[in-house]
Length: 74
Image (cartoon, rainbow, N blue to C red; front, side, top):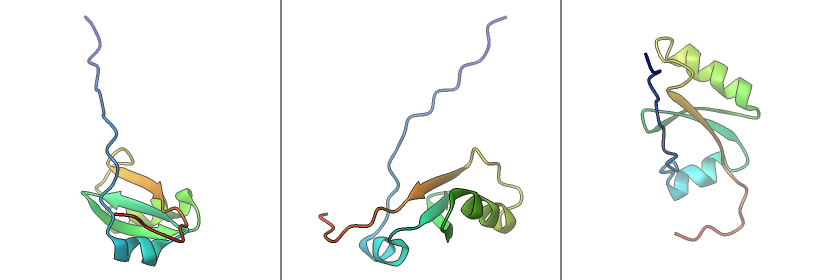
């Protein structure tokens, strides 16, 4: 019996200009389209997110680094 293949297509998170300013230079956890935790390292952020949402799986939480930028073009 063939294995079931799950295909996930990457989608960039929708982060507002205010969120870019607030989380500039940090890792953030995004769960259900919303930033739920931030920190200096991805492991710290994942731990915080799983503490807030204990029923969530690691696959449901996305970690992104908010790039430091002097100018944000929208």
